[in-house]
Image (cartoon, rainbow, N blue to C red):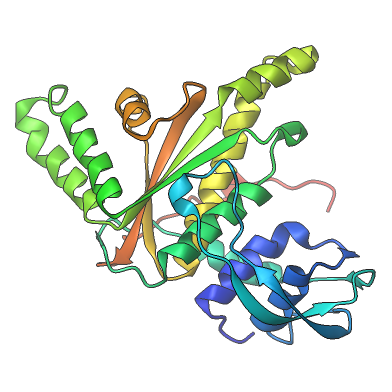
Length: 288
């Protein structure tokens, strides 16, 4: 199989949740023709040409800074009623999963525009599943000075709590995070969770866990797709220590519970070695 470009991996990953045969949308067929190699493209409707206004996906759950300007584009779209079957090979997705690593040496030189990063995060937020389609995930993306401010806040919060003899190491780690270009903060909307608990009392004790499952999928998808574009990233968990300061600084609603912080930026070094337990210890199969 030919080597795929990073942006192809990203598009393939984001389209994986839309692999079913369905009525074609303009963006689906366009992405299929432009981003997937011909050997991965199964079928697509006959294309016609139409001019219309498009803009990056925008969710009301994403920080206002994410908004970008719409533009006119000449693109090809399928006849609306014609079914489309998109195919992304499992090998392509697995290569993206394998390439996802923890990069701790970061810089502020992004390999792609911030607008594109925002759009990738938005698309992940929209596509990631949640129990009963409850859509409990929330996101804030910080760039530039706002990103730097987050890690200054983290240092301020940690310094009184960390023993003096350990502070230099902690300060060094925080400086490494601040050296990056941005941070994606992930939240769970607890109002959504409590609403689902009231609506489906039989599963009341499961909804908090299911919400954690969904935010974990969103974190993994965001991490994987950003690194497929050539960025480096690492996932941190300074919640709940920084929750109050974060909420005050960026006017986060009280019902948004912080779950993780994905630091991203240009790659200033390589990821470390990664070992795997033998499958004999971690995997079982029956009936095959």
